[in-house]
Length: 291
Image 1 (cartoon, rainbow, N blue to C red):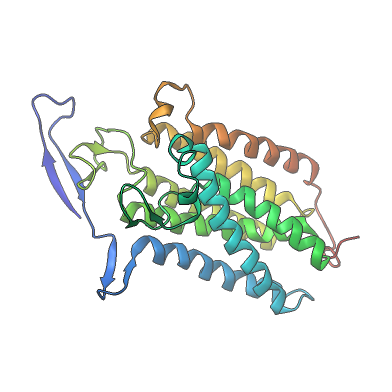
Image 2: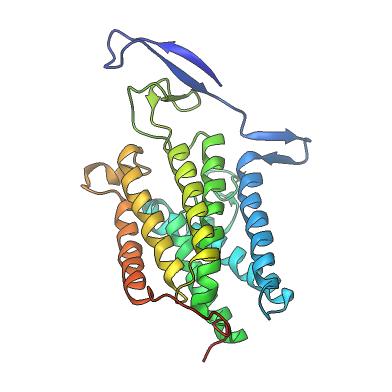
């Protein structure tokens, strides 16, 4: 990553030093196996979240093995939900004619090609996580809103890790920009752009810090942190989308892009939770168990 001077007489951008961004998306390649930054950071989000939740579970009467089970629910829900979310909301025109490719990490036509799962949508992942937690809470008799509060804190941290992975992949780039901190994503084009992934990563880290502090210091009814998470994260996402390039061609003529439209229901739900779960608690024992 080095600053470079950029000037084109046919470009609206003036002479300025921008950041040339062209890291390898691969950490190491053994020939038979390669570790990519995105995969590493995606997994890191789960590892950090698991260890934070492990401490919180130890402070309650729940057995630690329940956290292991919950983690399995969350991992499966995240991958399946995010994958379906991308295919349904962002690229249905293609996947409606290639249904198997939604679930398989390779392409059959026009020739066999291993592609991995290209395309994950956070909105779909979060929706699937909500369903998974509801199922988990009913099966193990734990208050769902208490789980949602704990997951919201680590969810913001995991989101930051994922956006850093997008940055290392030079994907989900921003719109053209004439600012000192603009990135030229060399693998995309030679145009200075907003580093939208970095905007989101830094904001999500801030949200993590706020939620972690509130969850430890300001006890309120279960569901309050969850609601605040939705409001902060998806309001941020809604605003930052104005600085990001559209992910699909069909978004070009839309007043709001798909990411913004999908964020609105989460923001509304978050506001409802904040209004209904804002009561301060003097005693926090026995909150975790369902009535």
